[in-house]
Image 1 (spheres, one colour):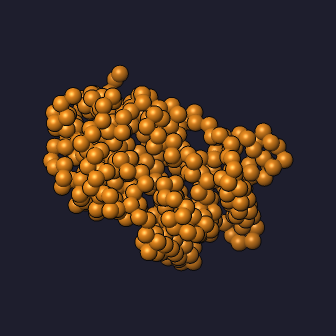
Image 2 (cartoon, rainbow, N blue to C red):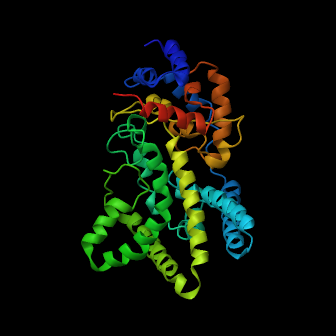
Image 3 (tube, helix red, strand yellow):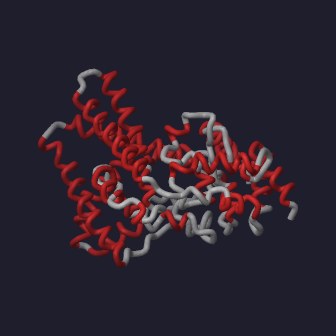
Length: 367
């Protein structure tokens, strides 16, 4: 394989037709760009330590701003203030929630107490405890399972029907209600009806988008974590369901609207996290990288809709254990070393709207 030719092709493919882009990535289906992988390893050896001084303040401030925004939105008598506070709350809570992604990759010993703290302050109050991602997301990073039917976080969206994209995004509006039903109704029912418990665990216990994915039962230490997280979330969900009996419906409806907005933001980010053009074949690391998306600076808006390092999603697939605060520096080093026209540059994109447009155009192609 002529690596240099394929490096140039990978960059040119960024604006090429879908069939041409898939052909370029096909060049890497059986052989990696070893120069890029070697550079990713060698240039970042001094990075990779999760810093408590970054994680804790970021998470705590995000959660605090989010909950304060909900309070202002509920208590304000001004519609304009309620809307503004609601938007701020959704953005802040969305950022706080995205730390669940970091929890799946960092070692428990790296940040003592952070997993517990996040669950108590964010995961359980938002009915998204960490067990819903732990043990699931790692499958998405396995070389032989990424992009296949076994991947819980992959659908070939770019190859589906045009109506599938708006449906994919809009269904997220119902996520908060679905979570309340899951934890507040189905979990208690499952305690006395084991088949319900098995059904809920297999199908509604993971943050996945692949409808055929079935989750295996938890084991060992993880099973204990699942138990306390699920009981806590269930108690909170039941309290939410009963809250209108104590107070009126307005606080609950405002909180649900804010949570729905955060869920839609996450779904939009998910929509452009990959190019979604793999048809089920196993992929090399390089092919996975090129099917994933970086939205690096100079644009700043990506930090809002792809927070906590998720704007470097392709780079994350090269180095899954790299803490989010080190990804910008890792990106700068690789871009400087590998240069224009490299395979690495082929995964860098301008922003959300061009990506949505490209995926949408791909769905309109007759196959």
